[in-house]
Image 1 (tube, rainbow, N blue to C red):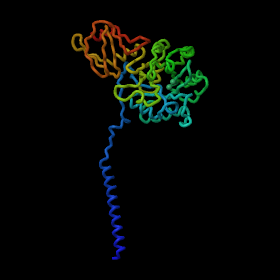
Image 2: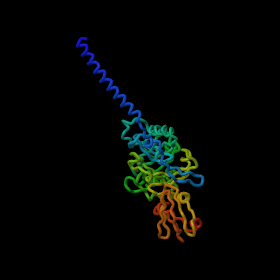
Image 3: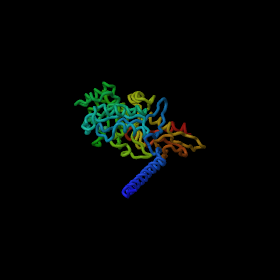
Image 4: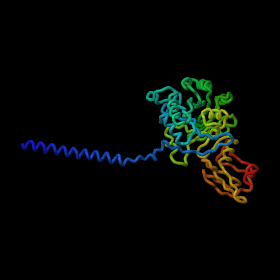
Length: 371
Ligand SMILES: [Zn+2]
Ligand SMILES: [Zn+2]
């Protein structure tokens, strides 16, 4: 054999061997990956929903709702579908998308008319069986401030100069009008003549007594005074978790709606009938009748012996009750054994029925149940 040929053959074989070895390594590597692939699906929380336990009463179920939410279509940081995903995971029953009409800093980048963010969220909501309500925020300086129009079908026609005309255009669509964060941004919850006029004309149906991290105690009184519904909403612009954190114990602000059915129509009927309560950070604000019912259905009483009772809080609202100078705490989903006080009204320290007015359960009422 010619030495050159031998050399060539050796050269070729060396490369074939190297090639085979490399191929073997690649195949072995791929094989290892496939054999050892382990999907950690239990870490994927996108299909896991936390349940919030707040019982219903009479013929009503208690729905947990957020009627004030922003997306990138106004000044929010989040795509509309993510708002629905967050709310579903957080255990809510419904949300309203309420992007500003007049303030849309991203409109050159995020294309679409004033109904677009709702449409995107609604499509996603329909896919997972979650209620998404169409809304918008009419946004002006004080005195009139900001108002949400809920249950509308076209926000574009509300893009007009006069906010009163915008409200009328919303009312023509059967809207429910919510006065937002009356104490923002000046810390003064002032009810101006323009609000007085709107309230008299039945053009404001609700007020946010709690918004984001703020409470407006003077507005607790307006609910009774003007027959409007108390609301608590997030007004969320960032991620929910970046504002309210993670974990079982925490809860975003929410409006409790006492509805005959879990549907958009059910929610709308309940809102116009003013059957709501506002909830955030363990604080409940609402009409005496509804807060009383909530306390009653949340705290289950079992008589033990003599004057001792076990009280189980089946809800996710912690209750703080005082009686005769003593404080009783009823943490969520726990049972507490107490000696029943002999006299005095029960004051539910975290339930507000008006400005500086806490839910009070007279002795004659509770003693029949406990004594
Ligand atoms: Zn606002
Ligand atoms: Zn807002």
